[in-house]
Length: 182
Image (cartoon, rainbow, N blue to C red; front, side, top):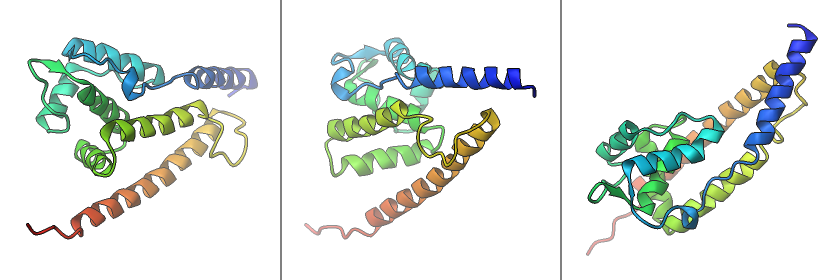
């Protein structure tokens, strides 16, 4: 690859980084506080995740989440804030985890915290990471896209291993909790 083309790709990547760093996912109170129909949910969530380069949310996806009981079924074909928040979380996490693991994680976290507070805390963490994308977890400054790809891929592997262990430990702690006798 010649130096000019390589620089152009790196400039394009840096432009993308700058654009993505400005993305902000919504807190609970920023989600609509009225019931939404499917097409409204799809448009809303695609608007949030599209700038991150994620595939658009589709009605089929949402219907599958409901069928799998990962999201509570809508009431009279309308979705409430909690359902919209769950669908957004699933959309963000489904690239890395099976739906059943995501639902279990949401349930585990909200068992000790209110859904709104847990959701907002998670969104704060994700927004902080988005704002610093490309600035952390690098051992050296990447000279080209291939090197940058190696760095972020290695981070992904390590993060995935660490996440897997945390999930395993949390599931283990749930399984070993003594049940209270009535």
